[in-house]
Image (cartoon, rainbow, N blue to C red):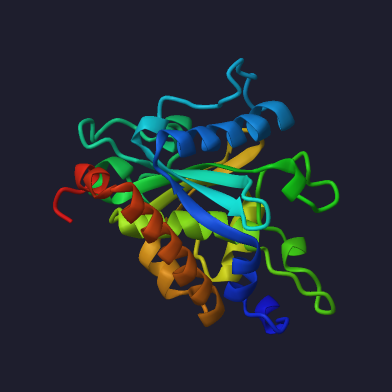
Length: 262
């Protein structure tokens, strides 16, 4: 396994040298999230039209919780992602993937409209600024986990930034009582997430969405329970950062809005 080739620092110690996860729950921090998205999705990748205000946002942001990854060295926010929750006031309103994949979802595997929708969410809008996507030829692509992220047996490397984004979302999902996560993913990303012990289950046919994507789902409990001790240690560090950020922002009211029984 890639984790057998460790430097003297553990994964969590190495992560803390470079990055921290910050829940983006204030207007100012959400603006940082939208700014990164605009830089990546609009200016770098051309997925969306550029906006005069330099912020990329959509109708699902109001029902989402967002997180940022910050550089310890200079305080710059370098990565972001969001967790789209079901709006409790419109519980049967579709999440983004339900709209994109309406014709391709295999509802014999799961029908998102027939589960407890307060316990589901969608991962989306993952972005890392171009100067931190350092692999040769990767500056023009969105964030992913690839074989190169882990280095080679002689020169191992830990993908701290990509892991920080994903584990920050998992921590937010756990905090908000989410049990099932949906995501539109490349086949390659699903394979590489499996290297972290994450079982990604395809739940429908592929669609064209900024490339070929597959609707997939993951169990939050399975992800956390399947972590090896090194990833789990990193997850606990990031979970503390997320909890501290949530506590500082007084977000219990937001949590109660979405899950009043928690």
